[in-house]
Amino acid sequence: MESVRIREIVLHHIHIGLKRPFLASHGATRHKTICLVEAVDTDGVSGWGETVALPGPFYNEETYETAVHILKDFIIPAVLGKTFGHPRGIRPAVSMIKRNYMAKAAMETALWDLYARKNGKPLYQLLGGKNRLVAAGKSIGMQESPARLAEKVEKALQEGFQKIKIKISPGKDLAYVEAVRKQFPDIPLMADANSAYTLKDMDRLKALDEYELLMIEQPFASDDLIDHARLQRELKTPVCLDESILSAEDARKAAEIGSCRIINIKIGRVGGIHEAVRIHDLCREKGIPVWCGGMLETGIGRAMNLHLSTLPNFSIPGDNTPPAEYLETDIVEPEIRMTNGVIEVPDRPGFGFSVDRKKIARLLIHRESFRA
Image (cartoon, rainbow, N blue to C red; front, side, top):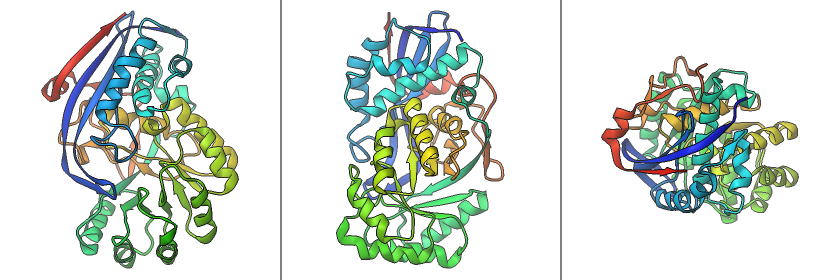
């Protein structure tokens, strides 16, 4: 396989509106400001990544602005002009930077895409993935009433989605789950709490056992493993960890103390594709199924998720809604499409889609170039 040498890094800062606000326990997302990372090697081949941080530090501590700061002042100086024999080589290059996983992932995924394109390979092949038909699930934000939520679920099922995730918080949980379950008793249904509960809510969470959910995702604090283990011992419903798992080491600890039975893997949350694969492999060894979560990405980030989901232990449909469902404009061609609840991962080099520079130009706030 041919190495890549980073000759130039271009940051394209774009602003995209959402077709409708997405509501979770930590607030509403109405738009995204995104930094697209374009890594160019000495032969002029480009690879792409994106920052997935929200406008504010509500999902984790990162924001668009902090991710850009870390990219410009620390990550880009560490990789510019360097030669990489494999994308894994970026890890030691940025190892002195603590956390800031979404900033690291933006650069790392660009390097994976560049390396795959340079060598004429689709990304999933480099990862060892086999299943190019990826089942799609849909995440539905909080609604004003249980009846309205049930309507949204019905629409998603009619569209063909194979798993439904609903957002919950104290007071917007039992009646909402009951309304959906009463109308759709057999669908794969899960609830995502985004750390909205504490041990004081144990009885409320135990009451959700009645509804035979596929899982309850991240009910407790984003840095917790201990209380989740206590909760899992009390619940029949599997606990799924999201924000608590930042590395394969976190996944190992969670498995050892029984904090969960399922893990959600997000490329941005864990610092890139390499660590995501390590978590996948460890969970497969421990018998813990995984699925791929979403961060309202453009087609660049969503395509990366799809390639990752071709690995064998991604046995639960991920949050793979095509970007056209939630973004006013996407930036890849052809459009990512779902057919009968499945998205086919392209067999073309890199992440498998073309980046539409004209659309980027229309969405552009500003552009910065850094050359070796």
